[in-house]
Length: 207
Image (cartoon, rainbow, N blue to C red; front, top):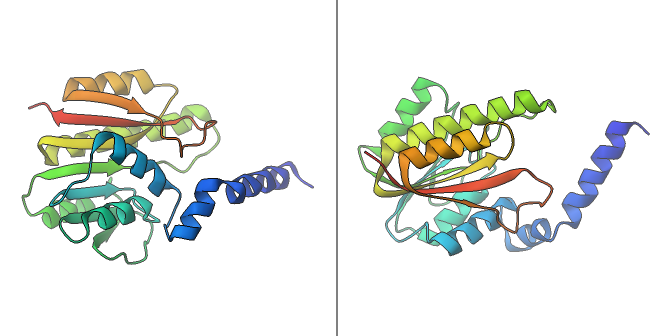
């Protein structure tokens, strides 16, 4: 058996043995990522009645699904992803590359000048396995999410964004602290411990 096959087999075993994967399947969530947002929301009170929420890098839809269930029709959820995403009740989906101006313009049109209460970004690049390349790609997406959130969030708005700890992490954290009044880093229990991911929670964008 090849090394790739052994690695893939180990990943599959870990995935299907994961209690969060099992719980997601049992409770009808699109992905285990919903539990990361559930924990972040419980700690930070991110989603509230009437909120306007934008989900960047939404597919397959676990975060959007959680937000729509929490709002229960009293609020707005707009999801964006390069990949297709099956329809979700209470969610408006825009398919396209967030890095392209035409997609950004379409997203801003959907907002229709409203101030956004929460920008969520679970975006991640396609991993090459080369750390320098992967961290650079991730940093580009993180900077885009920071820039976008500053443009659309209201004065009490919040950005929740996945970060990868490694090269450039401290620089991006310092950038976030310059741009927002409150910044915290959280590692939800549903994040695999071996993963380098963490979540930035940034509130009150500076003018």
